[in-house]
Amino acid sequence: MNRRQLLCLGAAALILPGSAHASYEATPYVWGMRSTLRDTGQTVIYNFRSSWSLTCQIKEEILAELKDENPDYRALIFVDVDFDTYGPSQWVERLKVRRRSTLVVIKGEAEIARIENQPYKERLRNLLDTAMAV
Image 1 (cartoon, helix red, strand yellow):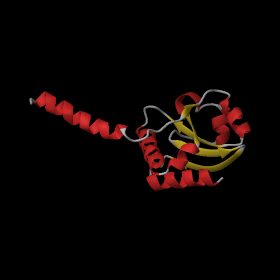
Image 2 (tube, helix red, strand yellow; image 1 turned 90 degrees about the vertical axis):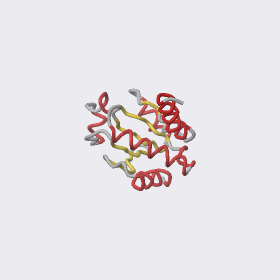
Image 3 (cartoon, helix red, strand yellow; image 1 turned 60 degrees about the vertical axis):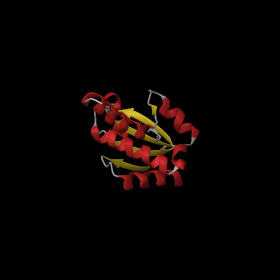
Image 4 (cartoon, rainbow, N blue to C red; image 1 turned 180 degrees about the vertical axis):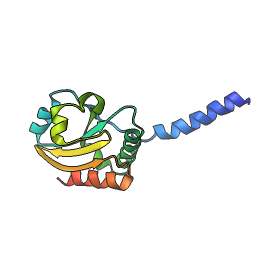
């Protein structure tokens, strides 16, 4: 086996184990869906994120791990809000979301919990537990 084959096999070995785990899944936000979700009365977790943000990517990997550990979390509704697109909107200003990498849990009109720029497993677990308890 030559060096190139060995490197390719090594890279494949690193990628394959991760594919066996659940991935972070969320509905991309589109204008107007907020009122529809609000009217359902369900608890929604809005993930204000940017595709280029390392913190956002780390947070999503942790959320995927937490969903693997506790399948009940999969019942929660996750909505990804592109902060680069919707950050300057009145809705985001009213929610006082000042930065990307913010998770806001909302049920109806009420904010239940929030995490800003904290990609820590225990804090994210607490947020999800709070969302489940509502």
